[in-house]
Amino acid sequence: MSSYDVIVIGGGINGVGIARESALQGFKTLLLEKDDICSGVSAWSGRLAHGGLRYLEHYDFALVRESLLERERLIKNAPHLAKHVSWLMPVYRHNKRPGWLVELGMLLFDILSFDKSAPWHRYLSKKKTIARFPDIDQNGLQGGFQYWDGQIELAERLCVEISIDAIKNGAEIKTHSQVSAPILENSRVVGVKYKDLLTGAELEATAPVIYNVSGPWIDRVFNESAGIATQPRLNGGTKGSHFIVDPFEGAPSDVIYYETRADGRLILVVPWFGKYLIGTTDIRWETDPGDARCDIGELDYLLNEVNALVPQAKLTRDDVLYTYSGVRPLPYEPGKPESSVTRTHILHDHAKTGLPGLVTVVGGKLTTYRQLAEDAVVDIAKRLGKGRIKSKTRKSLLPGAHFSSLEDIARQLLAAGVLPSVAERITRLYGSRALNLWQITRSDPSAGLVLDSEFGVTKAEILFVVREEFPKTLADVMARRMILAFEKGHGLHLIDSIADIVGGELGWGSDERNRQIAGYSEWLNHLAIPDESGPRSTSFGAGITVEAK
Image 1 (tube, rainbow, N blue to C red):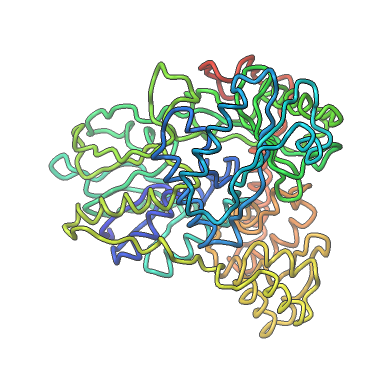
Image 2 (cartoon, rainbow, N blue to C red):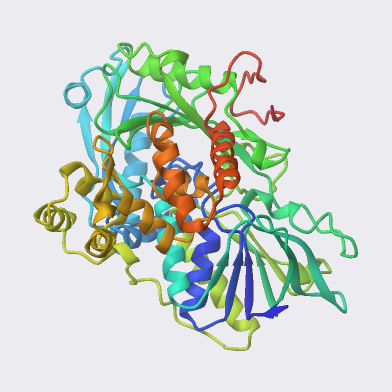
């Protein structure tokens, strides 16, 4: 049994954020994750660092201000992973939100982000809107608004870099380690029992503070354990689905944020990773969040809406490269419409419900993860008797952010003889750490082997992520380190070569290598394109519960 100051359960964006802030404060920190870093809802989001324009409809000015402030910090602290992008919100005659109301919202949005580095919004006439987005549906179009908000294309890379910094500062992060039960002393939670899912080892760890940060799984961590008081339901998650397509006829250059014709919900068409990400839906979800998949009704709903916006697109199911779904970790607020459930985070102290020593994080967003982590560690410090602390992450750069410009990093790589496609790839994924990556070739020239010149994949990159970024499975490497899972073809043409290199580093025999390849193939079910055999939803904003496939 090992002892810590705090144990964090869950390795999504909020869990790793707390582990990093906690470690920087000098607290002995253990993070346990049943799968891998960013293997849950953090990866299945819209991949945006947005300021929360929609939250103004619910008068949640504090959350908007927090989101805008954290968006700015994120872009400054991880400029290789987060950026400002241009958004366009068209205004149609049929919209539920009239142009004057959108204008008012835009003004408030700008005022609340008075200290931002991005430009203020501007109104576009119908003519200027068409000039910016020539193939937009013009029927009923009155004009539009251009504004700037944030994007995190690769949430997986963000979570990995936060984790690397947490480990560098003393945190222990154990992936593929599932918490099975609490350790109790006088009805107080003083630790956890957990299982290493790769070795089968049963282990225990103790700490005076246990933080449950498992997203939409928060109610499932301990509620089935014997010997504990029944806890209230905290999660009221809703499923959001997206689909991904290649660039299509009439596709916009901006992020398009617009009202659907079917029900007036706001959805997005997002240029993403050389493709287009289109979503999202908002459906109450009652079963295991891990079972969430895009169903045929959601897919048809989103296809119909994007084809209405861009008549030339004529997208069909056959154009869809893949889909994904995640369950938002929202507070349980029965009776409320999905869109009006608060997106702010809550720290629930289970001492109030008969289980002291345990705190559960309810809610949270990709954009505001750092503020959530700060709030949590301020709470942890008080529980440890350390008094008030000052955050150490507000201006702290992530490991790959130590550069004056990404172009300079790429130039240094090109000067070292690196292929342009390789230099572009590793600079984009690893920022300034791309230089460390390529240094592997100095001691091992064979590491310069290019496995795919189009994607820019090299043996050096594989060795680097295995040695520096603690993956344990092939899916960890493909989906959350090298991001090949989200390329067209999912990197399957390289799977044998990559498995050989990873297996050589991790000591896999031939049987384990084959199991790892099979495991990655199974993981790809997360990206399945639905067909008629799946459940069908007919509404996407009215509280429908959809059963998992």
